[in-house]
Length: 444
Image (cartoon, rainbow, N blue to C red):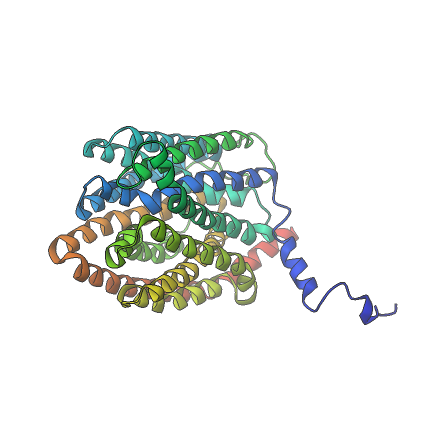
């Protein structure tokens, strides 16, 4: 066979590699594609919530400490429903739990729109925490059960990137449209009016998400759907918990819990931090979060290539360790442009590894443990935020804005460093074992 002449080359050097990389993002199963569509619409609603809801409460005259307690109530609700939702998804299918979660989220957004009294805000914050938790718990098991191993990194990364791109869309909508639309409706372009417009949009987006979830095939155990593990319906242990190896489960969960203890002190209140420090208007503030969302989405899409080069665990440790110095810039730089840059880079790096580690964990546990792991990971994340929210409120009450945030950022840097070190120590050699087990399974 003669070699192909150089002039017949199908493209520049590296073009073939790019095409092979692109093909890894195609071939997703039908229900996985519908799930990605659900992620778009529901993620857009939740992105608007995270970017603007605390500012809405602030516009209603609530103090920063009260806002922290509302966030804590939502997180506590997530802790309470985590394992029940996990066990329920094993019994009735992931799809039905998604419907339940989206329904509770719709109730919460509708309640925020209709009521402004503090007791009602707490009630609907609980509904939101429970609903969003239920939706999140089933996401990783659902994607694992509706994907092939060779596409799994890409599917998890696309889903996570979509979540971040919806942050961009939410920020653009919040910054450019909310004020003018509120003014046209007679709600006022300042104060709570623009945020109420955004709440109405959240309601519409969540309704659309319910419609897309209904398009997903019934995945109850015993329905005989291809790709679902035979042992998914293994009888769970007490409280719906199935754990085959306690030590392995604990090692998978602890780094994420340490991260959540740090993140819960800062991430829900970054909008308040940036607005309070630099006195930005709503359009400028949303533009800042749009920039960070774009950077994160780009980093996430590159992460599967890093995972193939350095391994899943190695790539996760690499990007998370690189993100930590930018937290120091974010917390202590007096210049707005450096803070915005640090937000974008830190958010991109720290979050880029999340979908890859989730895919690793789903392969590292047994099929019967998937929902338990997802529930435990989300429960500990919510628990960390439930602890961190009151801690944030306490610091704000005792020390005020500047000193309170200084302590928060120092604690976050320590916790993130410890979590990253534990990931490397515990799992740097574990990935080879997962790959070997998968090869043995294929050889049977």
